[in-house]
Image (cartoon, rainbow, N blue to C red; front, side, top):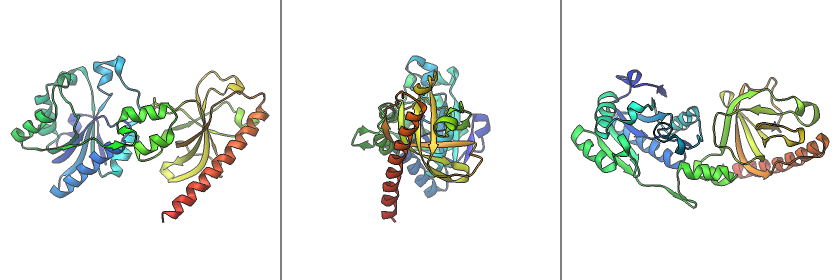
Length: 318
């Protein structure tokens, strides 16, 4: 995959392409359906499968008080896009100037002239251009005029309703990790560099790996069964993760601490991705570090049992 961050960089390098357009925050199952349709269409015509996204989310520019909290980083989004067959991504800076571009100019000057778009695949709620004046009907009309085909994909429903980034946020904020996983097609995860902790865990409870993820959507404080990944090395370990303020130690800021159950090589990875699989309990204050350590070990046994069941289920699929 090649990633571009401006129209100048992408010009002459991007197309001819089949293209999907959106923010793709969460890269949930409905987004993935668009990516796969683009890849299928591009392969049939010998075009490049591509995606256009925006940074920041347009709402941060046009309506900052209504801007949604970020679910995934762009690195995470691009990883999912690549797994679905996307080969080019333009992450276009969203500026006040871009916000005022008319729907017609957006399509003619950016999509066709610069990106050499031959086909566009979008959802049925797609809007574009100044004040969201463009819709799928205008897009189809412009396609007839400018020589690209338009493919409108219907919404994808789940047992929880139409799959959307909003629904993913609601699931995570409620701590419903199984629901989030069904909407995303993968476990919800937090990724970031391993950062120094206070050293209390290694001395008084259990040693942990701590991260400070750049995502803004976090589940409620508590303890979660998890799986921890070192993506560059393609290694993972069963783990249990605490999200909270460490009340037993009078903590005053949010921390994300992961205890790896399986042994792993020393030194630890520089960055990890923590997949949150199941909520175990609320975070609470214990009378002593020893009492907390006893509870952590109980939580670890629950995590071991969970991972054993998951491993048996996975083995049954093969």
